Image (tube, rainbow, N blue to C red; front, side, top):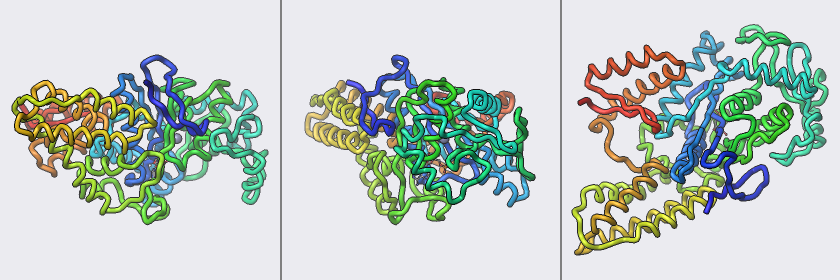
Length: 464
Ligand code: AMP
Ligand code: ZN
């Protein structure tokens, strides 16, 4: 049995076979760091995290890249509004992104590359496109020549003629075609700029993701993910500019996450109808919010309500209580066929990451286990340990919805402060500031707080 995934590229559910056996190379579009992220963004980030974790559950090694877009119109605008350099805005919200992700139980990606640190790769990519006739320079801007790429529209199923008609209204007459898109934007006063062979300026958004994905995952990789809104133009353009350079497929599978709506309208910063992740995390445990998201299939829209979150809290309790009870239950004599339950869970999740069905299997499992556990004979040690192990691997490891223990003795303020410290240290490590990172760890140790780094990120506990 293997995992089947709905591929937006083929509009069908396809069996997943990795390019390299036992390995998954996956990219998910990350945040543009001009503000705190909202619970709509968080739905996409959590889903991507669960896809990655499920591959690991199934024995794959996953290289998972999520970019941080740290140069963009909105970041520049905010910097200008606040009278600070745009890099300061980006640094502040990149740190907040890592901190809120950690609070959400989202594992740090294998890499979180930043656009501004991938500039050489973007410039080389654009130069390659100019050299092979896929791009042209006008007044210091560089545009991708969409007409030169025969397969344009294959992801979004749009055709160039229709797009041209639609785009003509606000056409920039300097472009050869109204659908050509910017790879590089000429330097403007008050904007940060980088040197390129065709002049100073900054990259367009689409090229950032292509360059970062290819730098860390290679020219062809397994999965590219992102929210539904990114299919067009962002992902269509990523494909065009990547394949026009390499002449080989960019990503094999394209996964798109359904939107989180509110009052049946999409939650977005521009509509102003959003809750930030941190606002909601102050009110509900991360596990409850994750469970709430995962009860809906990732491709369906999810209409956000507080009542839904309250109901999730009650539902999730059953799994937490059972997990805790199994840790303490004395050995009895009854048995449960744990392996059969595991197979049902796997069958559900292999079917395009059907998390609602996966939870359905786990709740059936919990009911069976509870029946035996609370019957007179109790549960024998083998079944009890196997049951706890399965719950651990699924509800803790794959879904991140059950807690193994309360952090640091349950002091919420201390935990929040520690999440901030950990996020800042992670940031320092990503920038290879090893001395600073060690100072943070050693300083905490003197205060009796121990940091433990693992593939799940960094955890803390009160000292030894
Ligand atoms: P942004 O910071 O706006 O570029 O978005 C970061 C990620 O969140 C992208 O993958 C978006 O597609 C995704 N996203 C944005 N809004 C929502 C929403 N309301 N529901 C689900 N995903 C979203
Ligand atoms: Zn992207």
